[in-house]
Image (cartoon, rainbow, N blue to C red; front, side):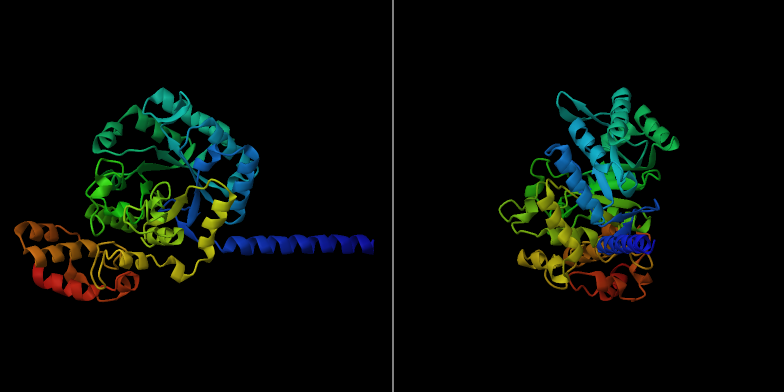
Length: 405
């Protein structure tokens, strides 16, 4: 009896040690709130593209390593039966450990992935998603790719949108999201009042697209700005101040273009750690979704959990390309949110224009329309601690007060 008791106690100790090691391993991953959904998501998460290229056994290995490492968020945009089935197989028995962002309005037709707004096709595509995943719900129902104002307006008061609301009412989706590559559309979605999560293409290159341009528009990537586009600044700031979750796609520039100076639109290469750090520096960002094809790529991406501050320092690359001089604001919005709500990047942008081009009635009108003004600055310094370029923001606010107020 004593031997049996000793054996049981030893087994329990081994199990306890294993659980402790597992908890310690997962504790290396950091988590962020997904807007106001109440969900906490891992800083880096997994994209679905790689599951089309591997078999079910490899899918299980990939998913097991991701889950064991603390990844708890996955985006499934692809309607491929193989992709969905592989993910469903890999999640079997561990479904509750993964928060699923699944897309609504995607179907598999003629051997390829296709976007749709047709109600019957949309319904069939979503039911196929649940069936292949082996679940009765997903956490985030993502309206698939809305990239123009016209597309945004088309879904308003449509049978398609009614179906999305119905899915939420029935509990088949817990939260409504929308994916877009267009900053103007993303901002409209954020202000809609019913979109809780926005999937947006974000990286150091795309932030410099002009206006509401999307990356693959003709000439868009050949006409990048020196600093971040004002519409993107407004979008990021609005999401941060209104607690709307933003999940990042194209973290590495799409196909990893930013990781090689030969393909980088900026002419210099970023590391994966620098790209991730750049995105996560924005307060509104919840997670960076990474395209992962195999275990080696996953292991490389998981280095993020142990990366040093030096490895994450993306400002080094900015200095290499001379995109900004020390002390100059690039309107990157990393200083936000302001404790009193001042849209700092916008104030700095208007101030710089006024001082280089002369103050105009138009600039004054734009300043007057801001929700909070430079005179409200308390000089708390929180913004400066987040600024990657050492801008003396309180002094800029003082100057803006003199110029505009």
